[in-house]
Image (cartoon, rainbow, N blue to C red; front, side):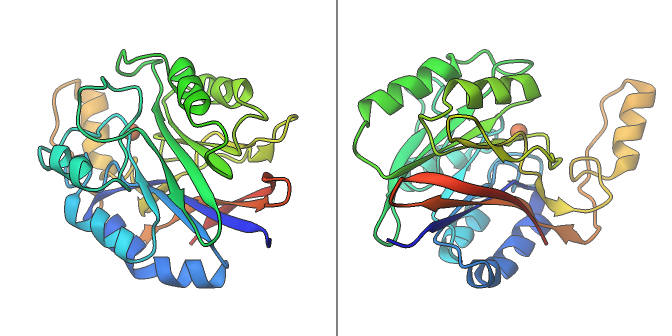
Length: 259
Ligand SMILES: [Fe+2]
């Protein structure tokens, strides 16, 4: 079987980021010969959280799976969105009683992908241990999929690397999200797992994580609550492409992507 090329796009921010992704996704999939696409869409709504309409639109435009993070339940509509769309995930280490799934096995064209969405616990919500959560999922689904990917949505770079190192050789790729800044450390770990600390952001350029810099400056200088406004600047798309050798079911390369 031919190699599988997997595209992962970093956090989509706001209506403009969502629109830019929807407009360009088909072209990226064609030009980069992509077989499977995962997009972290947890900031696609105005004011954080996942936006229902644009996330469903991303699936229609070619995304296979949508992941989220710490803002997964910020929008009331997200509860129903996870309930009715098995291809839209919320982190697996949220309480199990909450709606939706934290992982799934998804069919590509002749192959299957286990996607696990995790949330870090360093400087974030005190959720269940992401290490043990993923370990249990991998054990319960052993032999049921061809390749596996973890979206590790976390603040601390150390925690993202720790997850990647712990699962080195046990999952195909660990892709970090949340900080909205693409890191330059993409590589294959010693036992074969592809890793990057952060895939970056799909959202406005010259912004503070997508927000107008003046809002953040005011907040940092005055230490008072400030209404965040999304930047009007043109958008960029950031992500990575991981290529898998399907005879070995292991990654052979991980490259940063930017548009
Ligand atoms: Fe986040």
